[in-house]
Each structure stands twice: as structure tokens, then as C-alpha cells.
Image 1: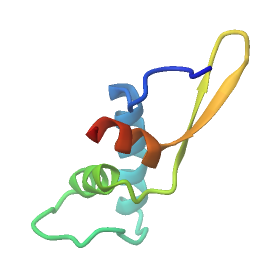
Image 2 (image 1 turned 30 degrees about the vertical axis):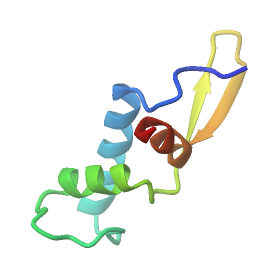
Image 3 (image 1 turned 180 degrees about the vertical axis):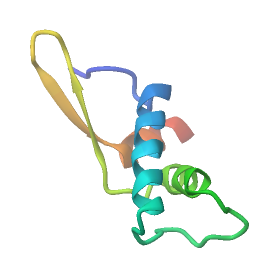
Length: 80
């Protein structure tokens, strides 16, 4: 049984991009080649779209069952 849609929701995207942008702003290494991207948010979104972030989403139901889904899988499903 799958929990949630087979793609990243806008809330998950916002949470991941925000957390990664904070990491970048605090000095974390950038995982993509920074071209004309200047803000940490732009860089974080580019990293998210490329699917190179090693992050897993935990989707939880009210009955406390959950499913861990790697964002790389969700991004690949979006592109189909």
C-alpha cells in the first residue's frame, strides 16, 4: 500500500528546499555547479530538481503507519 501521491507534494518541496537552503546559507557544500544562481533557495531548488539530495520523506498516517520514500524515486515518477 502506498501512502500519498507518487510525486512530491508542494508542501514537501517547500520543506526540503527550505531546509537545504538553510544548510547552504550556513556553509554546507553545494552539490550542483552554481551558474547564475545566487540565492541559497535557487541553489536548493536546483539540487532538488536534479534529484541528487540524499533525503527520504516519511509519510505518516493518523494510525501511525508510515512509509519512507526516497525523493529520487518521487522526482523520477514526476518526470514520467
